[in-house]
Image 1: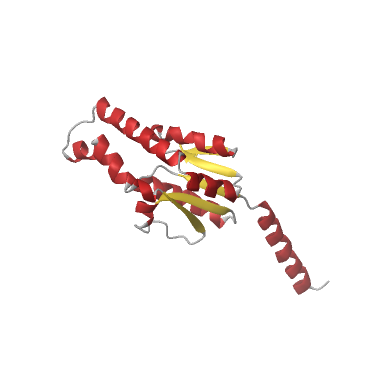
Image 2: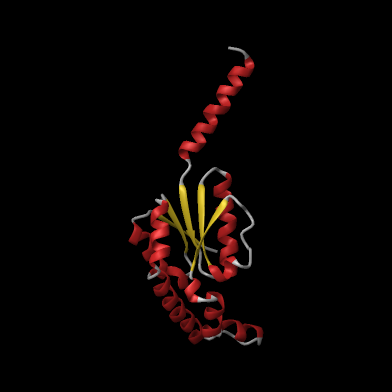
Length: 168
């Protein structure tokens, strides 16, 4: 066997191994810009290894065009929920207090938890989103370990998908 034939067979073999080991991974970050960006960075790393990577992003944030990497597929949701990020920040009052230089009181955090719980219920009731994730036949779900997002741990259980938590 000559050198070129051997090299061709080696390339095909290595490509086949990578393709066979590729997994479908679904990321569900909290519906806030900073978390979308953070999860996008991790998703890019997995996509660069050949995995089929999906990122759940609320429609209001999709419009911002934050996910630049075309190898990451976007699973849009929440059109009926409006601007989730604005809703969370407005109802919790966290940003206003921050920019006014005031200390955060525990009550502001509590309002954030309550608001996140309401949003989690609405998202978990979104039959279209749940069906779209189910149809992907994902082998792994990745969620954020941030306390406000822990209600979403129900999602991989609902769909019988193994999951991993990441956090900052």
